[in-house]
Amino acid sequence: MGFLVNSFIEFPTAVFSPADISGLTLWLDSSEGVTKDGSNLVSQWDDQSGNSNNVVQATTANKPIWVDSTLNGLPVIRFDGTNDDLSKSTFTGGAISQAFYIFVVIKPAAGGSGAQYNWDHANGTRGWCYTLLSGGTDYFNYGCAIDVNIETLPTGYVQYTFLVSGASSDIRRDKTSVNSNNLGSSTINGFWLGSRHSSVQYGNPDIAEFLIYDSNIGDTDRDKVETYLADKYGL
Image (cartoon, rainbow, N blue to C red; front, top):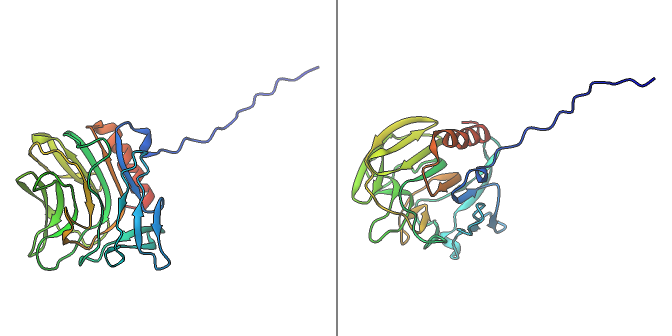
């Protein structure tokens, strides 16, 4: 006589990836695709989105450093605020129009003389960027000719989310909105980390991960990306 035994097969829960959401244009992860020398100086940081928007630096004196086991046991890319940057002059596929999303895990630039740039996007003579103005306690978000005071300067690692969508733009820190404002209609094309476009006005941020989506992915998918980054980096 045969016996029917009820059995349950447990399948592993799928692990979320930022690439699960359509529109991923740039994905830099300090744990993946980093080309560095024996001194951990970084010459290239490969885009994990599949779009080959890799950022590079050929000059040894201008290379940032890869620093292991820094944030929740994971590495960061550290810029010196003097002459370090990584860049790609134009995006694969050309300029990105609003609306778009940017996500970043960062310890922002802190002090120094003049504007301290965390990143910038070249677009004519002025790009869309994130910088600390001289004097120092407030971060500003530049969009075209618009300056927006984000908040008091954080002193440690944070997660920022930027929805860049004209008058409906929103800036979030650690999954909470800190500023809603009009960021104009500027597109972005080209990308600099650690400096203003064309490699001037440097900043000294640590950057762990950086993502750009070429559309408004909506609140549900935004929350998925924010949760992924928060869990990964212990934020």
